[in-house]
Image 1: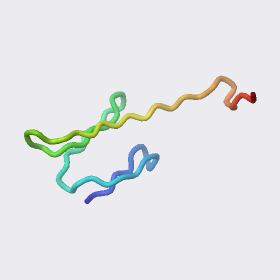
Image 2: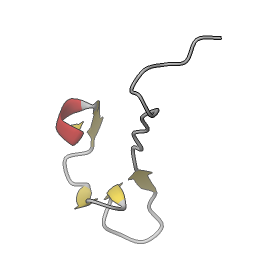
Image 3: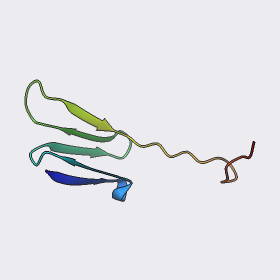
Image 4: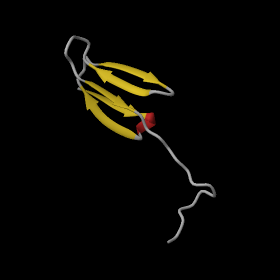
Length: 58
């Protein structure tokens, strides 16, 4: 297994050593085993910030 540190460690996980890794700044990342009838993991992280930078009180 190989360790993935997505976006500098924001998310950490392991995938099989032979899996293919594809990264795109807009689309995120894709991980899959190269072959027919295999699964694919697609990952994208969205960061949102409230204007003013703080959380509103209720």
